[in-house]
Length: 391
Image (cartoon, rainbow, N blue to C red; front, side):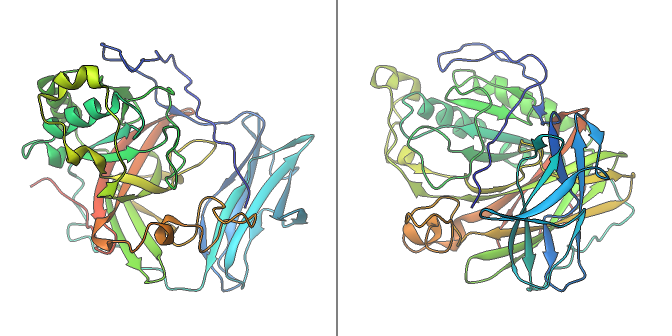
């Protein structure tokens, strides 16, 4: 396994909000890395049939240098030159790196599979482009963070029956001491932190009415895209998902997929001198954590902006195939130098309740190297999610 350094860069001004901050903070969109040598790809999953192929491009300082650069397949210390197109008849996870001049790119992982790829979810209204719009909440909290329950409390009160369907909530667990969760960095390194649509934030001590008003504002604008998904679950912990993105507006789009789990018990710390902020509701419920991001298939150009669908014309659809290996660890838990079966939370935390698993699929748009979320959906690990049209 190659440990890939995660780079989260904000290209516009960011005001850092401390955990005791009082103000709404406007932040820039999620930024990507385009300096140095960059390796891009048009697929992250291919069929291991010898003909299905991934195409690479190499950029240097933002310029296309594919014809002059070298692309390598990397296996441990072995580097094999492959060129800009790769196919194989052998199932496996393959790592690639590009070299140009004296520089090298980050590593890129491509999965070759033999299992069938699901079809796209059926579109019952192919001429319709009026989609339901939701906003994407990334709740950055941790069990050892004493102020984090107050963010949880705010969000629980905010997402009542009238509002909850307008939001997809993902709990990103990246606080010190948290293990077995996806490596999605906190963009400001301060907890608790609520990142909304990769574009703005809201303080944990803000008002419920204020946040609900913002949600109404963010979701009232027409959706630029609709999202559908069709997952295929296997009992060994592998899930293959085809996500379709249909454009209401012509633009460049990227798509990401996060696997989330509910009802995870981790004892939550709380600032005892601030318990009054919880209005006497502190209890065992705060030790159970929902929407926890276990696997994030979205890292592209050094940031979790999703994989590139390219330009989609209004009314047209593009697709991306995701491979989720819940049974294969993201960390080397048994010390053998590899991340493999046996290293995963899938096994180490006892029997998984499959009913606790669901996905967030999100789409971003960008101006230059700055990305924002355009729409998002939530769906069960084994249930098809069609496009949602405004009724």
